[in-house]
Image (tube, rainbow, N blue to C red; front, side):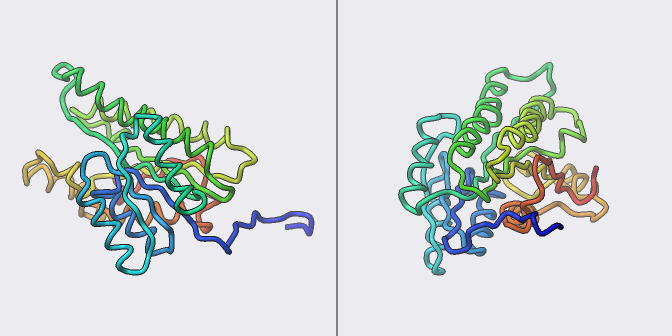
Length: 255
C-alpha cells in the first residue's frame, strides 16, 4: 500500500446501532443477542410475536445492554420508516440493518395456493425492498445491510419453488444495491442458510425428513441459529467490511 492510499476509518467513539427485523424468534432473535453481546444498541422488530421480542430486549437491558422492541409490518413503508425514525431518535443513528424476517410455505407448483404465493412475495420480496430502501437512505458510513436468502435456491428441492423464487429475488438485488451505494462506505450482503433448527424450518416436518436434512452437510447436523448469527455478526463488523455484494451460503458444505 502506498503512502497515499488509505483504509476507511470507521468511527469508534460512538455506539454502533443495529435494526434486526424478525428479531423475536429463530435466527433473528439469536442475531439480536449476538449483536448486543458485541456492544450494539439493538432495535428488535417483530410483526406479531410481541412477548418474545420484548423478552429479548429485556434480557439485553438486564445484562447492561441497550435494546428496544418495535412492531412493524416490513412490507409497509410507513411502518418501516417509523422503525428507522425510532432508532435514530433513541440512539442517534443506524449502522447495521439485518432483515431476518421471512415467510415460507411449501407446496408443489401445481397445488400452490396463489394467496400463499402473494403472502410470501409480500414479505420476502416487497419487505426486503422496503427495508433495503430505508437502509440505503439512512445507514451511516461504515455501515452494513444484511438480507436473507436460502441455500434451497441452489438445491432446487421439490415443493420449494415459490419460496425459492422469492429468495432468488433477494439475491438478485444484493450486488446491484452494493454498486448503487458506491462511495457511501456501506456494504450489502445476503446470507443463505441451509437447513437450520428454527421453528420456520422444523414446522410440519416429520423426524425422518429432519434426519435426512441433518445428514446432507458433510458436518452431518442441522445448522443452529447461533451458527448463522456468527456469520451475520462478522458481516456487520468492521472485520467483515471488505466482503460486499455477496451471497454467503452458510450451510455446512451442502453446496
